[in-house]
Image (tube, rainbow, N blue to C red):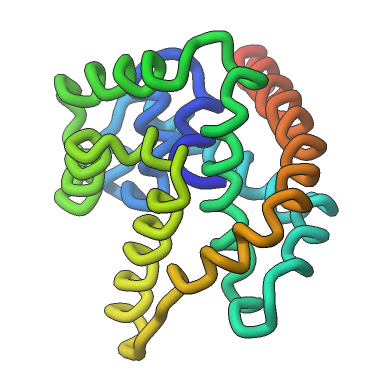
Length: 202
């Protein structure tokens, strides 16, 4: 799952949401400096990713991704699922999408957590450009995949154009939407169970 889903699948505290959102950017000694809620949010992020990556419905969806993008099918589906979540938001949250993201942004703007520079820069960009709500449009999906491509280019020193997969994803939207409608309620239930176990100290 991507940014919007991780933020939604959180306890309603900004530290927990930030941990769930930024877990991949705050690791090791940096994470030790974070609040207990942030660290629990980061642990929730890990539980979400493990459940998603191993789920048969998600694996089925990867088969819809063409051979050109097969290696990054998990990344493409993560981002496209945020698009589906944004457009079916009323089925998964009683709070309107814009109200939810603006509430999160308000808390994120005033956080005093000692975030490392990369995480702080990412968070500032998310808030400034309203990136969580941008997933309502395919342009937001394209922007996210272009950003990921830039990261991959710097890491592997060769060109990537994951954003070019958007027409393929859009053409298969009905199938992905059916997968998402089956999968996401199961993920919500899994996260709720995980939180209960965490609260009970298990």
